[in-house]
Structures are given as structure tokens and as C-alpha cells.
Length: 197
Image (tube, rainbow, N blue to C red; front, side):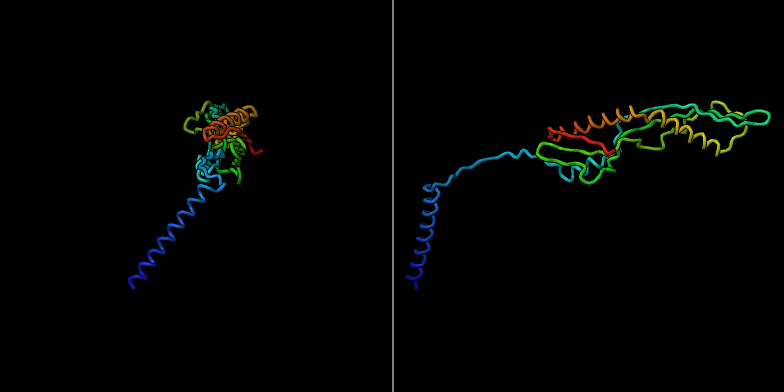
């Protein structure tokens, strides 16, 4: 029994030694190209987490315009006219709302990226600072509805004077510059920025 155990151990040792010799012979004498190499993957990928972080910025302001409007209304009377004149102040913020991006708004390939942003527009419809509104002149009796109508007239005037094609284009140019900088910082060299129409 002791002899058979020793013979089995010798056989196992011989097999292990033969396996090691075969592996060494194969590694040293075959025509295989056995070398270690490193390759650099130059592809840059925007991860879903990065896209979510960019999207989480929400409203991104690219142009802010402070405006004041002198707005009046006249009510014709039998003996005299009533007049209400007020000065309204407001700040119109123009930019993009990243919550409105569509699926696939960022596309990457290698070191190129294409970004499609929502249309540039007014970020907040409540831009009049009512605390700064001043009564300039008032004659006669005016109802809250009359004052509300004057407020809406002031809003329309501010939008007409501030949301001009030139100001919208200026905000779009600022958005393009900011997004190019961000994509450049992420490693992209070829950057295309588009805006939804």
C-alpha cells in the first residue's frame, strides 16, 4: 500500500514536471508574437451621469436685460378725462431651459460631440418687479382690474422692447460659447452646437 502511494506521488510529480516543460517549450520556441503592449483609447464618452448633471442645471441664463417702462391709460369722461400713469421695472432673463432637451440631445463619436439645445427664450414670465412699480400720475378712480390691465400692457411692452431678434441672437451666441467651453473641458475637439427652431 505504501509503495502504491509513493508510485502515485511520483507519477503526479512527473506529470506536473512534464506540463511545465511543455508550457515553457511552447512559450520559448513557438513562432508566437509574445509581447505586452499598451493601447490608448482616444474615444471620449459622455456618461449618462454627466448628461444628467448637465441637464440638472435647469434654466441657464445667457443674457439679462433690465428695463423700465412708462405705461399709461386714459379714460374719456364727460367733463374731464381720467388718467393713470405708472412706471414698471423688470429684468428679463433670456437663456435655455435644459429640462426641455429631447432624447439624444448629446451625441458623441471619438473626440467629436454634437449638442442640440432647446430654443433660446424668456426663462421667467414673472419678470416685473412689482415692489418697485411707481405711480407716476393718477387722476380719477381706478379699479384693481384697471391696474391689472396696465400691468399686462407693461409686460407686453417690455417683451416687445427686450425680446428682439438681436438680443435673442446675442443670448444664443453666449450659449454657444459656454457650451463649447464645457465640451472642450470634457476633452472634445470637434464641437457642433445647434438650437431647436
